[in-house]
Image 1 (tube, rainbow, N blue to C red):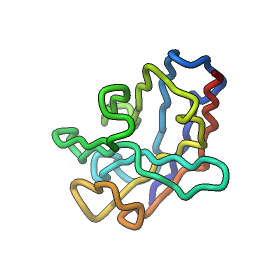
Image 2: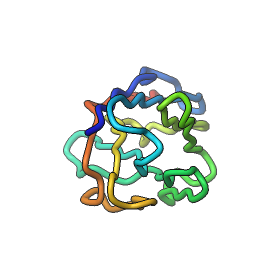
Image 3: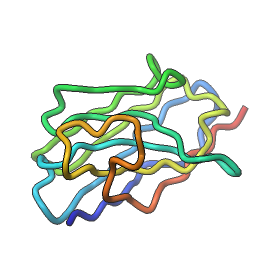
Image 4: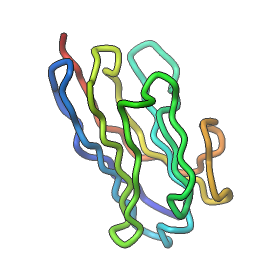
Length: 125
C-alpha cells in the first residue's frame, strides 16, 4: 500500500501560479503510476494530468495543456503539478492518485487504487 498526502494548495489571483506536491509513503514510489485529478463543487472528479512510473510518459487534460506541468522525483517519493496562468475555473479540490498495476494510469479515475485527501485550490478573478 501507499499513503498519499497533498500540499501546496491555497488562494491565488487569476494569472498566478501554484505548485502542488504529493508525498508518498509505504511501498516503493517508483512502482506506481501517478495522476492528478480535481473536483469542483457540485461536479464530478476530473482528470488533470498523469505520469508514468519512470516519468517518460505524460498526459494532460485539454483544459490544462500548456499551463500545467506534472513531474515526479522518485528519489523524494513525490509527484508535483506546476500550475501556471491559473483561471477561476481551475478552482477545485485537487487529488493525487496512485496506480499500482499499470506503468501509466492515464485519465480514467478507476485505474487508480490509492488517493490522497485532497488540497483546495481557489483562484479569484
